[in-house]
Length: 297
Figure 1 (spheres, helix red, strand yellow):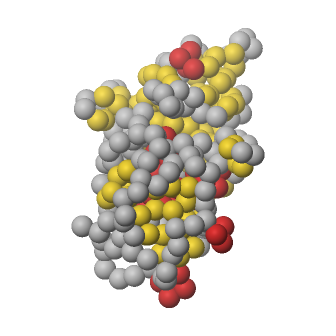
Figure 2: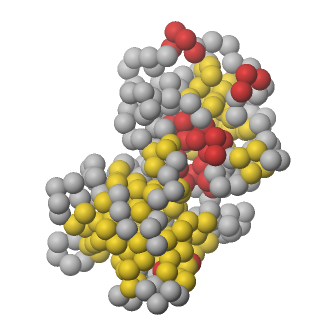
């Protein structure tokens, strides 16, 4: 997996010599997580600290569109290409120092049920020696797939706006499977969908806060990879696994409304401790979208 912080501007997406689209950003992190395909009711989630693994934050959709997670583009001839037809497409990224990074889509397919409506892509980047390396790293010798999501995320930590999502009609983010952005989609919080007339956009964002224990909504995680939590929500997408664990926190898209158990795997306490630490209830009163329970080891 390519590591470090990059400001990546995707200059073009080319398939069979035909330009499909253009620009923007990138963030890299590492996270190992299990059960990324588990989306059944009463899910027991292994959470992790990473908001997103290797991501391309801000690929321009000029000449392209993103319907849910399915990328579609047009060749110079006007012909539409989508899904597996994008295999072989190349993206030329311009980094902040002016150098370029060549990217290539190696596979495109939907995930197994119950996520058969989710497209995931194997993307590689070119190394200096002419070989190609998986953008999201590998698992079991196979490239980790990436799920495209509209808009961009703020990867800062400990600041106002850290971890927040920004809408964009021209940019999207590749979320690597096994990290918060992709895992929350696979848990059923698909931000392009609605349930009972309610958009899942805020549920997805609340999930990214919850997975990382971003209590203060400032991008700071208070957990470690592999920590097991029980999650349930206000819409019944995930239901309480009846673990008899105590409440960790009630969650909104802005962070925790309150928290009781603090998954504290680091020194100190969250800056919002005095404001939000208290007795949480297992109800969705007060605007909570998600609740998680945590059994401290």
